[in-house]
Length: 150
Image 1 (cartoon, rainbow, N blue to C red):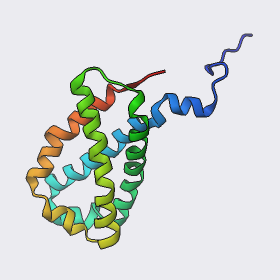
Image 2 (image 1 turned 180 degrees about the horizontal axis):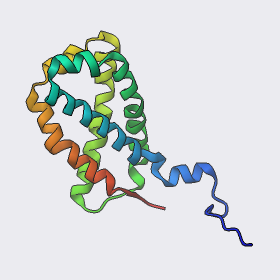
Image 3 (image 1 turned 135 degrees about the vertical axis):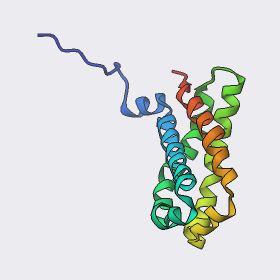
């Protein structure tokens, strides 16, 4: 009976973690997907239901965990990313900037002010539609195509 292993000779857990870009791609996609469903809920059920049932301080704190992780690992792994073309590079960079810029916003509004109304009522429905129809699908598609140098 012969056994095989998928472990590369001399590859440590840290090297594997680094080779996969610290799993930025997966965590960024999770973060964008959570945001997508929060905005979709808002569009379907309205601001009042969103604030009552979905967008709470707890939800915001939970969202900040993968968001912060993706912001840090996206910045750390950017140099090792292989881009398909210039548009891919621009979209990935924009997604990292978008996620990174969202972290202090969520900290301030969600933790310091604890005012979820500020999120929802300040941004009109047009903002949710823009994210749902253009920005998030673009980011998810470009993140899906992302590869790393060996």
